[in-house]
Amino acid sequence: MEKKLEDLDDLLEKARNCTVCARDLPHLPNPIFSAAKFSKVLIIGQAPGLKAHESGIAFNDASGDRLRGWLSVSKPTFYNPKCISILPMGFCFPGYKNGADAPPRKECAPTWHDAFLLHLKPQITLYVGRYAQQYYLPEYKSLTAAVNATFASHDGHFVIPHPSGRNNRWLAKHPWFEAESLPLLQNHISNALEN
Image (cartoon, rainbow, N blue to C red; front, side):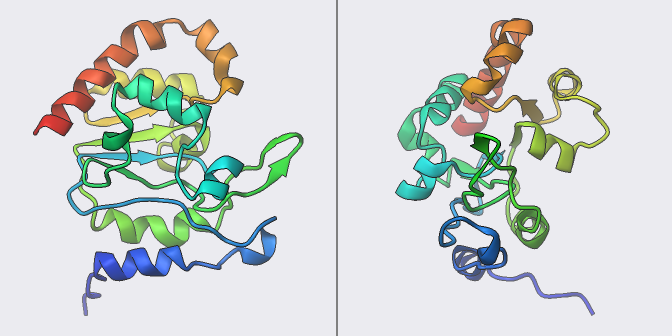
């Protein structure tokens, strides 16, 4: 017998109250994500940072400012789930490891993503950073290979580096990303949001 599709509102409520990895988090769980049935764009990122954890708002930091600039979208558009859904690999701030944000908890994406993706049918899916790329597009051996291949395919799936300042070296080594790839991505995002 085919399993009945869970109502999106029920799924959102369950995910907001998730405690699957509570004992392994440095703070109380605070799942941060957004989703709406007819979102035009889906961003699959890494995990919220401490500022996002404290404010309850995804990409509420310098990385978010850079990402919105890369996409050429305003804050109101970015935070409107009817335009853009945000589904991190880990919904909660994972703490720190070796002086940087720890990797997303491994329990989160397998627990929640498939259920959400049954509801979300975006025109564009954006995989932000290596964790999202490795999970969804493991056939690419490096982030650079994934960026190149997905931008060449024009199939609505794009890999980009995480907009953190930690990736400034990658950006400096690959100036074509900002010069050539981002204008293409901005055009795709603009067309999707206008439709």
